[in-house]
Length: 219
Image (cartoon, rainbow, N blue to C red; front, top):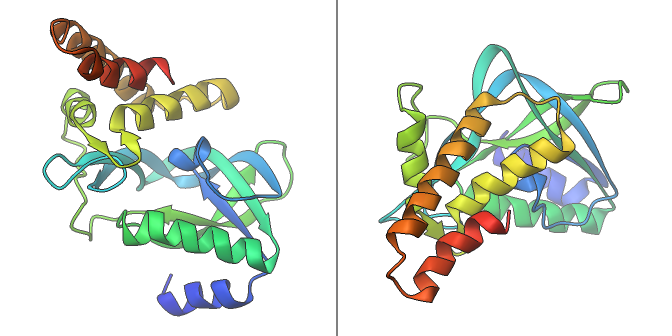
């Protein structure tokens, strides 16, 4: 989606629907009228997008979820309906900064299939492709290596651990039909590595240990 269309949305749209499949699931940070659980097709969720602001630093990049094309794939998430010119502008400005300027994502339109069987509808989706400098994706990368990257990373929005564990917890609680093994395998590995770090820091300061404990127990 080109910048002219985004600018048109900011200037003229009275309503938009935004599909969240990552941190938007549990941390939308904008006002919405309604939310609806459902899925998009033709993609799978993968933690292939590097992050050097919210969940990492240039020295220790974090990893965030993005969409990877897959002919038989589907990604479950939440569609947020935002209504009113002012609310649309606030939501889109905030998301464009969070996802595009700082995160390296682009904005696309996809078809959303609601869980309740109501008619499919178009949604706006932020996704990252391999054509950006932060992309870390490869299906050859073992889950354990991705988990180690995540456990080591922290940005101004919090730990990368929190990003993964809260996402997995949300899906388990609110979207039990989602069998995203990539997410759940990564969540298990992240928690295991975090527990190992807690044990290895048993002689460290309370503050250092609390960084790891909080990331897991708060999810």
